[in-house]
Picture 1 (cartoon, helix red, strand yellow):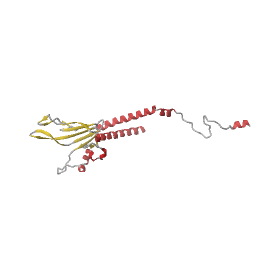
Picture 2 (cartoon, rainbow, N blue to C red; picture 1 turned 30 degrees about the vertical axis):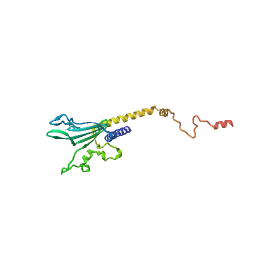
Picture 3 (cartoon, rainbow, N blue to C red; picture 1 turned 120 degrees about the vertical axis):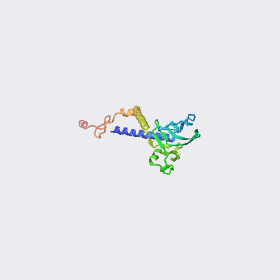
Picture 4 (tube, rainbow, N blue to C red; picture 1 turned 180 degrees about the vertical axis):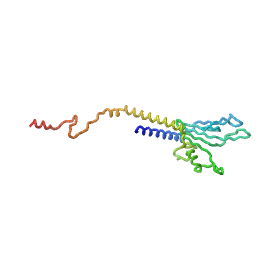
Length: 223
């Protein structure tokens, strides 16, 4: 039972560590490169669409960093059936983070009320608020988080399971190395080989102790 509890504790710690790493990447990992639709590959006068994170085809603008990814579909402006320039952004927009696998996700979709007004903040449905996660602009300034990011709250289960198992293996390996190191240290070896002291009894002489008085038999023989 003790080993089972230790196993569950290590698994839980690994899962929490995977989420914390994903949040750290979302907050502080800068984007280092990006991809966008090719302007010169025109279809009916407009650039060809590319597949996005959800498999749908659109004009996806994607940015990548260490353990972080952002994909937002863009709009386009044209005239007389010809592409002129990119304009605006659409939804759904995806923000993913985690390492070595992307394990957490934030998805932003536009929502309108009955009058066609776009909803924002706490006006949104609860499920949408959860899927969007937290805006980094709403976090304390001392965190120095990357601007226009989102702290994801929804797991990408495949990535989260893989990251958890990898961190679990790392924690088990570190524990094994720690035990091996402790066994090889001189102090630990000395404690294992040091003989135990015999229990002290007030009426029995201890081994190696000196007798300062004469026994009763010696007193009678001397008399």
